[in-house]
Image (cartoon, rainbow, N blue to C red; front, top):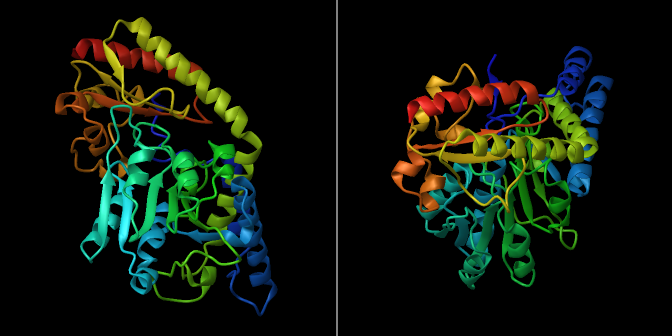
Amino acid sequence: MSVYLDYNASAPIDSRVVDFMMDIYKNNIGNADSRTHDYGDRARVIVENARKQVGVLLGVPPEDVFFTSGATESNNIAIQGLREYAEKTGKKHIITTSIEHKAVLETAKHMSEHGYRVDFVSPDRTGRVSADEIIELIDDDTLLVSIMHVNNETGVIQPVKEIESRLADQDVLFHIDATQSCGKLVEEIREIPYDMLSFSSHKMYGPQGIGALVLRRKNYKLPPVKSIMYGGQQEHGISPGTIPVALVGGFGKACELAVAEYKEDEANNSAIKDMLIKMLNESGIKYRINGSLEYSISSTLNIQIEGVSSEALMLSSKQYCGISNGSACTSSNYSPSYVLVAMGMSEESVDQSIRLSWGRNTDVEILKDNFEKLLGVAKELV
């Protein structure tokens, strides 16, 4: 039986979340925005309870939480939703990085095609961008700094805390894509006074198709973001459309479980990472870890196995391990990882790199046995 090692693409939904959602599907048929009957009232209670659960996880008031279809929509709203404010203020400069998820990269490129000046900062070989370089790019026209918290391919934690602390006295909005860190770096996220934050449910054991955009109030005012779609006034007009009650409920349940179990998850994930590195060291295989081990989450490992094509390894070992060699959003048409390229790696090194990501449901014994077999395949391919 193959072991799933692609949690960064989508984590398995927790069975407790499934059970909770099934109860909603079976017993709550109302629209949360229907106000003329009890069915709508009961659906609304589920939605608002989930909003509180998201708020507790992040340490923000529930009224700052807006449900979306996922981090891609949230990222688009956080960036494109500033157009009206940019026109009023004349501030049309955006700073981001070259290793962002496509949901930010492509949106930023779209803005650059419509009169916005966009700077894309690249990381060094460790996979981290420089906070100094970000801050040095700020000028009077800077509208937004948008930085991911944890890179989805390398697991490297970006210096969002340092960047935010140096933005405190700047008239610049700060957006974090926390898709890979929510439910993991819980305490760190709670300490960062960002303006906007995006994340998805399915990266943290919840259902696919639901996420959130957090808009932090300052002096009782939300960031100047407008909806990028037209429709009803659901989510105060930020994300119009019928609220998927069961998905929202499942999302809230996943956040509740994260609050209760993130420390245990962290300990288990760290133990798995240590085991995998030990197995690599004992295998005799020549390998290199891509990105800083010092600044990385415990559930991701990106490695280059010298002399072994990642495509060949994935195909030859898929009966043992489900792994990837890049972001899921670009995997249908293979091209070298733009993240690893931005880190200054050679084309050959990028071609030899794979990503492993694991989590709460990973069976350690099955993983150990199957990863040993994957290493055996790698030796045959050298």
